[in-house]
Amino acid sequence: KAIEQVGFPAVLKPSSGAASLGVKKVESAADIKEAYQEIIDELKTLVVTSGALVKGDPKTQGVDASNIIDLSVLCEQYLDGGEVDVDVVFSQGECRYAAVADNGPTMEPYFNETWAASPSLLPKSEQKQLQDLGVECVKALGFTSGVFHVECKMTSTGPQLIEVNARMGGGQVFECNLRTWGVDLVEETYFAALGIPSAPPVPKQPLCAVAYCYVNAPKSGVVKDLSKLEAILKREGVVWAKPLVQVGAEVVGPEKGLPTWLCDLFVTGSTAKGALKFLQDIEAEMPVPVS
Image (cartoon, rainbow, N blue to C red; front, side, top):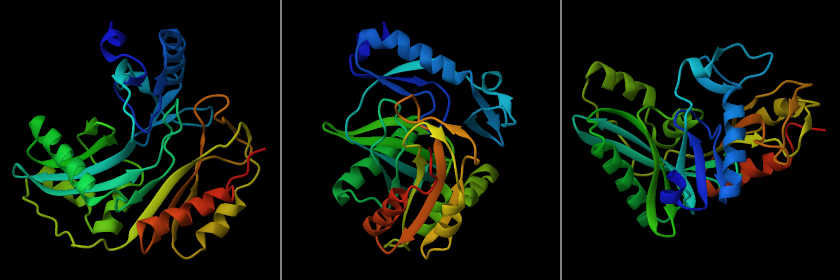
């Protein structure tokens, strides 16, 4: 019944989760049952560890995610265009901060993230539309205070909402906002929780530009070496180069399913375009070899 309303292509997505885990694009009715079963099987492997939802393995210590969050599956409209994050701070019923960061094209059909850059490279007019959409969606939900991570797309029909997260964004989002605009989202979360009015000072121009990514496994295989990351970390402009796998780990490439994240890279630059090129040049070096 849902697909009769949504149409094709569509997106199957868990009602709870993070980082595109269990999200898949479907092109036809014939795809749905197989995709749904694939998602259910993947959700059964998820665990919560240190407050984060991750794919479990024999070495992962955590709690079965199904015991904590709702892992039912939604069917959503597929949206074309580039995705962005709009990070928003509300205080006393008004928006006090809203910043747009670009997300690179996701790896379909699983929507694995590829890169992000801040400040946004989109035209100012499109950034304004996306900011306004993010702020209005938070208001429409009745929130008056807090930190929000709103995900949107600038589609062929204009700005469209993907989801509103009533929390600070995960992963690199804190560092992204702090380095680009000097806004500490953890501090803003504390202010909101304690009922302290807030109006973070925001510079007219970004303090610096950043780019970051989780490097996806290019193919299935075994991780052979992590020493390249140590050398990369010593380069000027590299904030971190964190391994997300261990030597000897078996990883999944796009030919077999949702690609495994190999490492977490975060770099800075004088412009977003320059920072993104620096990041992609490092990624092209295959920082975590798989064979």
